[in-house]
Length: 196
Length: 196
Image (cartoon, rainbow over all chains, first blue to last red; front, side, top):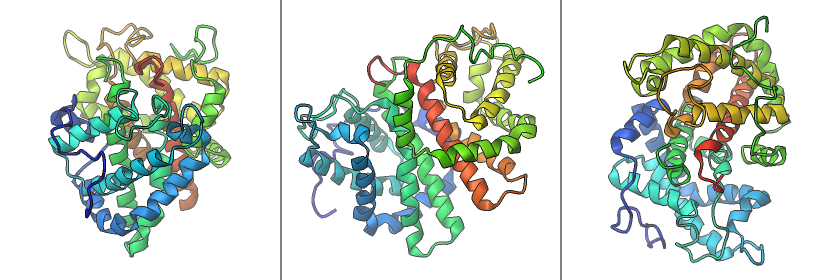
């Protein structure tokens, strides 16, 4: 990175400790069949996506922008209009999220920041990072569903650097698993106490 | 069905109305890119899986049985041993779930029964259907993660009836989307009031 991304606080003392332990996360990886081959596939995807981040974000933002029930989470609660600064602020961190997902470094700082991301989707901390006058919460119902448009539209980008079909499939599958793991971690603030 | 399945109450008056409306569900389908082609692919899979249900369940039960943190939800809270009757009772409804998923008939009765399934995973109604002396809840953290082993191990079964690679891929993708939709519905009892 050449410039700091506002609100990207991974690895800083402002991020609270995750309520999920690394041991819990290791079991979650078993549940989703996430193994060393997935780590390798994600890291292989790093070089593939690194210089396509903006093009990928264009597709993802295009999808969200085309669905009023999804775009709602970025709208001003008074005017109902999309908030440009909010969309732009989130976008920069979303680009960094692509790289962090491909990096696949699972340590305590990574786990803690996943929880922070969850809090920022939930009413606990939504809007705070960007000072946005927007809706109170990203509804739970859409969180996991978005794994499909995100990873389906990512696949053509994964195929653009000459890897074999099998390699592209492996990268895609690893991305799906990683997204499900991350979404599960992000869900913690939404889930009733003791039910996670 | 030739014999009634104990506890399979879909479409009966004992099932409460889902807190999620059919209009909500239609938006959820948009979020996960679920369309008419997915309905067709699921229904195409019906004939494929119909006479393979027991073999599919063998694989799924084999996976859960091999993972102590997953098998825990089927164990006796005193002895810590797996409860055979409980596993068998759930298995019969799980087999019906395969057929119902492939049938892809989304009406109010189906929606209501999805909520009932969620309640039976959650502490609200776990164990009641089978009178099992088991753990209080299936933890939220594993629910969505299991979509991967379920759909990944299903894929070879989808390929066993001579369909083209593209058809098998389409059936598999539709199953993934349907599972994410259903898991989202099942999560409702786990999610804090107002956050769904």
